[in-house]
Length: 407
Image 1 (cartoon, rainbow, N blue to C red):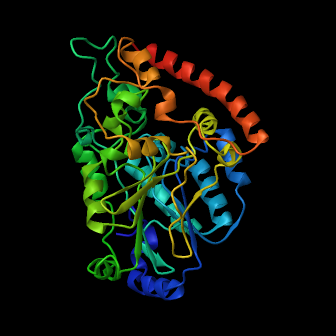
Image 2: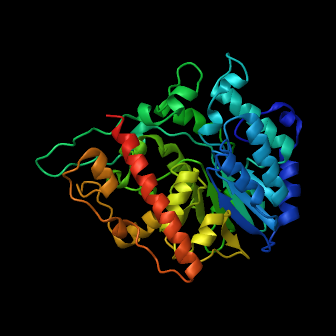
Image 3: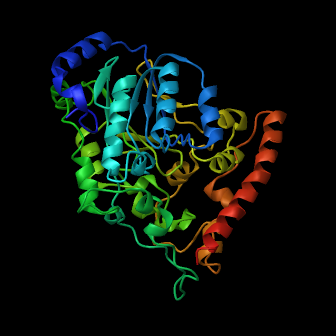
């Protein structure tokens, strides 16, 4: 198997020979810079315009962690533009790429659409299989979520009370249930579907398997990436979310097994639209989503560098063979919160917006505790924050009203 699905003439290629040529071309060259971004959602015109503004990055590798667009025409544009700006592009699809298989015909499934996307990747020179560049292994991992991955309790009301409104079911918050179509016997959100998608991943190259036998200090660096989440610690607790049942549609235990087996130096993920940067069991987990324009507004309002965050270029995850220091700018506010707090999913203390939707009598955690406002360095940055803070507050209220309307 090559890529996330077999595709046409790939059967005729000597993959071992290609791999040998590829590894020899890039062996032990630490001049490459590795970037990552997810959830580009170029079906939104403002996000497509963002893509056009990204400058060319010399000697660069981009990890594109899914949800780039919805239609194959949009996907072609995104992948083509990424190839213009980055010397090498690795990609794994997300859930949005599985939407609307009807664009191929009413008899096709979401797996067929992924196969068409794989052929597009091959045509454009987009890499979807593990390869070693500059002494660094890059490992894309295809995955899909299942609801049983959620092992934390539901949203907790204060003792002796009940929630005023129960959070909506996964089917109500995830368009995937209506927008995808799977082969007979596979249903969205099931372990069977998640396992079937996991089985589409190719076998690891023998050279990588050999390298993984070495102690971490002696082996080449490994960067893996996926669209979905391998661990539940990589999403805020339900008490901090507009959609507490989001936990049901974001992660996979099959993905977790693959990441644990690789024990990568870095794992990049997407899907939640929540920036993240943390280390768990020696693995640095990073998420750098573009997300919707409204989510971008909320992100810019709480950062120490509104001008940089407004641009939101793909993030550097490796440069000159070294990982950058974690940003202390407020971009990854939830992972920064868990650096200060112990995760406690049984706590009834909620974010103010979560309480307003589901339990107005619940005790709340102030927004400035969840996402402290960093100091700003310039008057221009202050003006920018003031502009985005107004938009931030308007956005919060729209989200609260949206989820209240689903009672």
